[in-house]
Image (cartoon, rainbow, N blue to C red; front, side):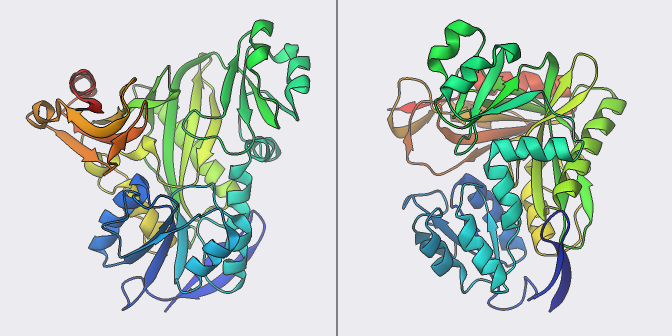
Amino acid sequence: MILITRKISPVGYLCTMIRKPYQKDFKLGVLGGGQLGRMLLQEAIDLDVKIAALDPDENAPCHQIVHEFVHGSFKDKQTVLDFGKDKDLITVEIEHVNIEALKELEDSGIPVYPQPDLLAIVQDKGLQKEFYSKNNIPTAPYALVNDKAEAMERRDLLPFAQKLRKGGYDGKGVSIIRSEQDFEKAFDAPSVLEQFVDFEKELAVIVARSANGEVKAFPTVELEFNPEANLVELLFAPAEISDSIDEKARSVAMKTIEAFGFVGLLAVELFLTKDGDILVNEVAPRPHNSGHQTIEGNVTSQYAQHLRAILGLPLGSTDQVRPAGMVNLLGAPDYTGEAYYEGLEKVLGLPGVYPHLYGKSTTKPFRKMGHVTITADTVGEVKRLANEVKSTVVVKTQ
């Protein structure tokens, strides 16, 4: 048995006994059976950790390879309670889950990482922003509004991004309001209005905090977004920034996870302003797009690090082995149906190129169907290969 001290809120600690993860019949429950769970499972196999996954999609990427797959909603309280009651530990691969059920499981003595009360903050972008303000974590100017009428009154913030407080992900739930003429497309719901930042680059840092309080951050990565889908399409690591900016970005990420007290992995998305400031945009309490390149590019992958953190094991080295990058394979516009990866054979012949397909049988516009990681001797070569992959592979239908 392992005695771990876990921080269950920014001010509270709780000691819990959990069985060793490599002990016979140890079972890790994961809310979500998508591609993140699939890649987590691949790392769990090396530690002989048995994973059970809960997902509302009966054909979710994990459904054929996980040790136990339960078809059901991770937003339904009773479903989550029934799923979690016989697990030794619970984690998530998506934050939009039933918090009440997770709190009850935690109260019954089952460790839940990341902690339910902290997940509740991340679920609500308004609470996130207030948390940053209260803990002196730098972020863009913002306002909280209840509906479209209140949003229209905040002309002083123009231009701004309106973000639904709950339910948004991968660019969904975001409306760009550049002028009063755009108010017609404003959401009529509780939202965050985030003033546009005059940024130089969009960056991200993956940081982990273990159950015993150990913290490690991966090198800063540089992100490029698909302008139509508003989600990450390319990333490069290390980011083309100075050592001092890298240190500042990693320091902000570590301060953020320490302020929350999260156990597990936290993806911290950042703006580098033209004045050299680092601002927190949003966080994700789980493995994330901005850490996929660690699978081949770092000593420890983000998935292995998440497992180490939640299982109370020593965190692995975050050192980068070689410059690395990632290209998201998104469903091509105008194609919906059985997926076909045109051009995949061509990129498999390129050095340092590693496709990761998610096992999703059907594609639709901008659906995440897989990613390709790339390693090379220089960031410049990573970028060249990434652009070749991007222009060669098309996810469409036959």
